Length: 404
Image (cartoon, rainbow, N blue to C red; front, side, top):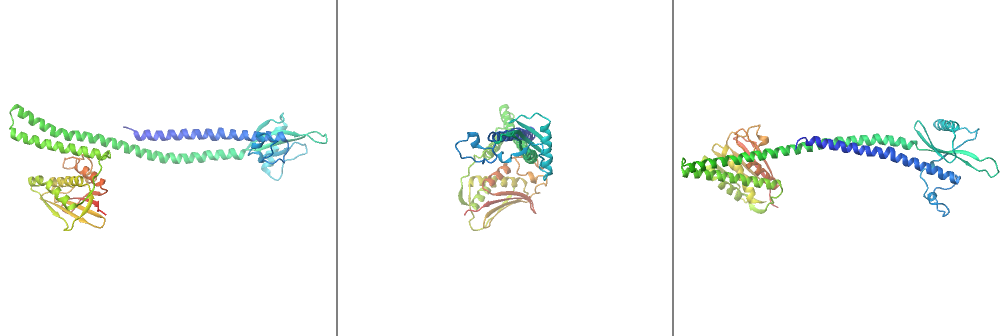
């Protein structure tokens, strides 16, 4: 899973290059070739009928299919006489120079009748042919040149190349930036998952080693059976709890942890959480002080999972409190706010941004996923959770939408 961001960037740049190459091929080869062919067809069609007054939308059944189709270049045909006395149009200097050069080009070459030729000058790209028209009075045929200037089209194509290149460059730059960030997120997630499994293995290995050590002591007869069995049971409970948390957070990550919502009084849920940590508070000499309003506070929640989230935070508070945990609950028009505050030393400034990370090891050297699981459960309830330092210790605040 290394260098994913660079692979994404290379893929985007390669795709952009291929797209630009296809665009250049289409715009600079296929489309100009099509215009040249259309111009030639229009000239040949005009030379065949030798009549400039024929309209360009044809309904008469006498004409063949090619004539009925018409050509969009037909109105662009310019006729240039080949009489010795003829002079190009002097009113437009650009056209004058163009037609003068064209006549000079034709004068020095053997131009075959009804044969299309190409002549380029500056921004002009002419498709022309020499034709003649028989005279009714028996005089020599009337000779002239027909030409179509597709220079504006080819010039537009060049401009289109630069415009497309600029647009493609801008889009590619934005996509590369987004792809780089997306790839970096993937790499970070892969690294986080790897760290998660390494830490989970370490956390599971610790109670397993204790169980194995005491079991071997009992087997060798060097350890009191009663005390060893007590430690084994404690470590087994610890490992069972950790495995349950791992399974729960894994299901949440996979979206397989649906909530069973029901309306209940949140005060009852909090009292249940207090009872769940009573053994730990009794052993540590910590007192939990509830501060709830007298009126019921009804929320729509999954009481089992929300109780677990509160219990995990209370258990964390018991480890760091000196003598007291204060648990308060308040309700406004939209939310119920649960606040848990201890009287310990608070959370180190460097640990605060990572307090809900899985298996994050802070200043105390302890790690786990209890707080991370609490955060995921609160988010499943469309609530928020945050941690900060109060006046007397760490404060965890949960906000859950009220029932409607």
